[in-house]
Length: 85
Image (cartoon, one colour):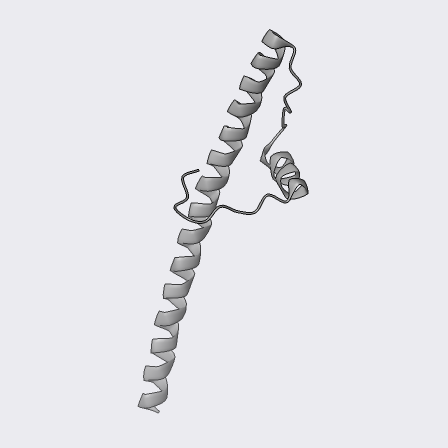
């Protein structure tokens, strides 16, 4: 009986640890998503300014989802971690 309680307690501690890890990852994803949204917004604003200046036809994205859809359509493979160019 005591052995079962000890195992249950260990399982609960492991579960709490996993929940903590998932929460940290969710927070990290939210931060990265916010950064991507801001990057797309700034890039689109810059593209708009350049299009106005030189009559170019740069793509202006409404949000990160639109940018990600375009990226997927181009089938651009992800860059390896640590790649600089």
